[in-house]
Length: 215
Image 1: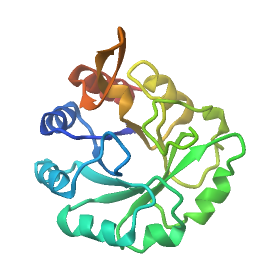
Image 2 (image 1 turned 120 degrees about the vertical axis):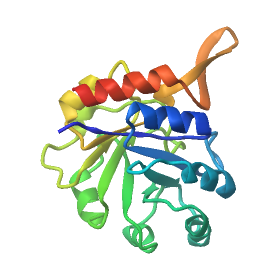
Image 3 (image 1 turned 30 degrees about the vertical axis):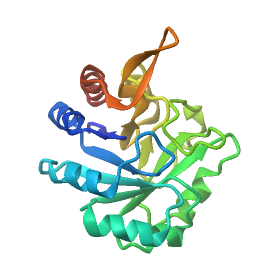
Image 4 (image 1 turned 45 degrees about the horizontal axis):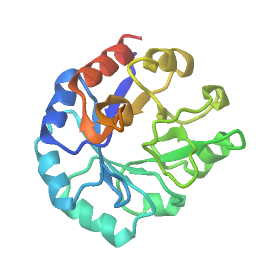
């Protein structure tokens, strides 16, 4: 069965259409003020309204106030919630929506305990641990830290690109892969090419999805 692909950090309608046309299964919209990919509620609502059928909308939150999440849900018809902070299982479940819980993996992370703690989650999103940064870092982690008997669907994230996604799918066999910075456009900064955060590259998106699903 082909792996599912989520393109996260969508900020522009043209990137949304590119991702959908390339075969993305889900798109992520960030509601976290400290992120360069953060969206206002109004902007997110406008983007989600343009989604075609059968492409899921995923809202990403980081230790957000429950009242704020409710305001988002009242305006944006999100299909799935993604919690990327220190939220408890009760925090995640209180909104009455399907959710996934992001876990930033280190050598000391007990993923089996995480799966048991978040038993109501639809899956666990496994990302790299970078101190002080909840996600979108472009860093990867040691995939060998993922136990083979993890009783939850895995959404693999962290440092994935069109170059390494096939190897990631072959090794981990995740239910889905999640990418943001790995498919962003390049810009020149002090003579070096860096990712233009929030601006996607159509060619990279197409390559990423094709290589992930062909593996």
